[in-house]
Amino acid sequence: MAISRICMALSLFVSFSLLISLSAAKSRGFSAKMYHRDSQASPFYDPTLTPNERVRRSVARSIARANRFRLDNTNSPKSVITANHGEYLMNISLGTPPFPIVAIADTGSDLIWTQCAPCSNCYKQKLPLYNPKKSTTFREIACRSQACRAASRSGCTRDKSCGYSISYGDGSHTNGVVSSETITLGSTSAAPVKLSKYIFGCGFDNEGTFTGDGSGIIGLGGGPVSLVSQLGSQINGKFSYCLVPLGAEGDGTSPINFGKSAVVSGRGVVKTPLVKKNIETFYYLTLNGITVGNERVPFTGAYGSVEEGNIIIDSGTTLVLIPSDFYSQLESAVSKQITATPTQDPHGAFSLCYTDNGSFKPPSMTANWDGGDVRLNPFNTFVKISDELICFAFSPSDNVAIYGNLAQMNFLVGYDKVGGTVSFQPKDCAKA
Image: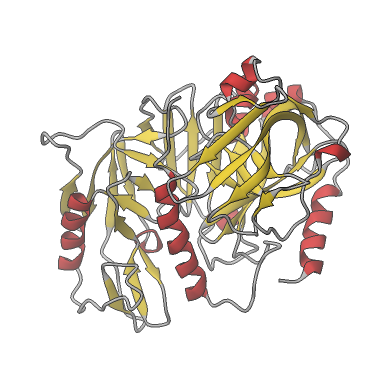
């Protein structure tokens, strides 16, 4: 990874000098870019890695990601997204003067947090640490304030500041202080959007399965301190993104849209209801089943009926993770449609694999959502993990069901928290 590449990417980001007001953003929405960590647009692109090595890294992080959902739950801008070992990254800036950071765009969490200097116990990241002492707009939040109470797993520290502590099921954690700061989002309109007094976590103790490619997390979940919720009425609860498939032509970036720019409309749109549950962070959807060829495999609950809100849609997970019983039925239906002989994955990460000599053709598959059917592309359902091995991109998991980003690639996915829907529209995201 070349340092010059990182510097160039950051200089391009901070070179924007114009800022648009939030009233202007509200009137027309705004968009920024997302990018896959392994795309050539990423400052962390490593040309020495083979496509297969990148896929295996994505799978490993996807499994770890599923474990992170086992939490102790007691409780109009545009940007660009990039992929990071199966995750997608966003560029934002913190503070005054703006300090650029690169963080995971995550619909499965709320708090925006980054590693802060001086860091007592942090994972090694490739970019410099944000130093709150160098920002004139950084403020710690009082521990008894409403803002502190809104941040989950937070409380008073010895010096009466608002401390937070988040632990994940895979052993990862982040600890620090909940603070307010000016956040600047880069925009595809070449006019960055400046957001004042936004809540974020300044992490001084962060360890686990986080990679050094990112500086933290940009929470896009449904809870009160996520970026989406803090933008509030300015975006009317709407955001959307379009994830570029791995290996697609172009620079690998794709837009993330907020407000009016995020409306998904036109031909081929399928809308499915958002289901409210006791954990407001997650976006729960109802998957009625999956059709393989002409065979429909129902996603049934314990009493033979579909449970509402039985799967979480998540931008930070790679694979589609589903209950073991449903997975067994689905794998059986898929294998019946393929004439080739299954081949064992030597690494044991995938259950169903085949030798691919260039003629392998996956069966047609359709996600049967409550509200409509979404026809999946071959790269949504099978992923190549070596020069000759291709595997089914679904995996059994009894922790939680997750509709990961492989299945979302080349779809414009729109979230409408006010209207209570998620929309899917087929799209060539490399041209979006």
